[in-house]
Image 1 (cartoon, rainbow, N blue to C red):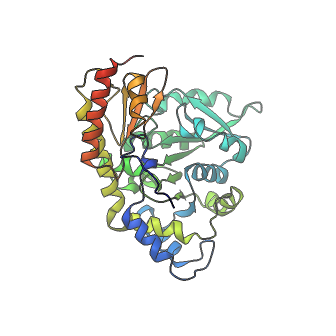
Image 2: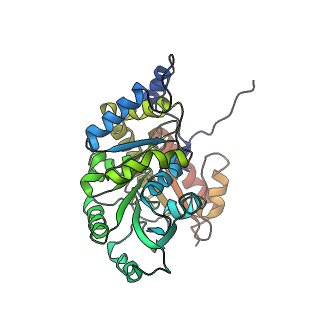
Image 3: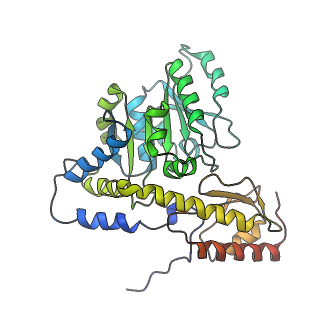
Length: 354
């Protein structure tokens, strides 16, 4: 069998990274012998117990395959077909899920401008003007990404303000936490600080971007939604027969705060990359990184040339804007080599354009 070539390093997305060694070891252990299917196994019980120890004993947990599935399952359990979810115009929910919420949940997705990725609570007010209007889909869930698609991080008080607004008007707050580990590490807070403690009603807890082979978790606290959650997961085709292999990974991620060490490392590597590019001629950083995503304006030819050596690409072609991401697996040597290559390529190709 011919050898498979891999790139020297991936800076296009944390999805490009491999699997944490501790997680791979947990998978190997879970692979020994037989176990009951569909979550009736000891690995699932253990992982749920660990999540409940963090997020509260009333937490209902549903393990799923991926991020889109997690968001769909959460919304399917919470929404009636005539209801809508409100999110930022850049939200993964709105622009990167191929219409899955509309198709599978049957809900309308309403978007609001969010230049830095964060949904301001003051922009939610106008949505209330048509409450009770039979001609309009009724806003029921406010959804935010943590960290956001622009790499920004909601402070706990910002999450609480959104939750308070939602609850005051009969709505729910959903957090798309595909990168919740990075946001929590950036904030110096535990994962659970962005759960029920902050007023969150529905949480899509990311695993894949945190270093798992695959798998996310949906966490809910409302008893009525919790009762619907298992059926929503099955209808959304997200119930794994060999669920132990998702649960074992989460259990490993939570052991000894592996999630925190891994996310904090990814964030530090992003800060290192920002420092290495900060004074480079022809590279304009959008903002200092808050988690593990760095956005930079630079010449498109430079990005295209480097894409032959690194897993990168343009985020916004019109603005010549690139997104560089780091992960648990990114090393300081890789960051330094990539920064040097980028500076050299931009020096050859000219200044940023937009």
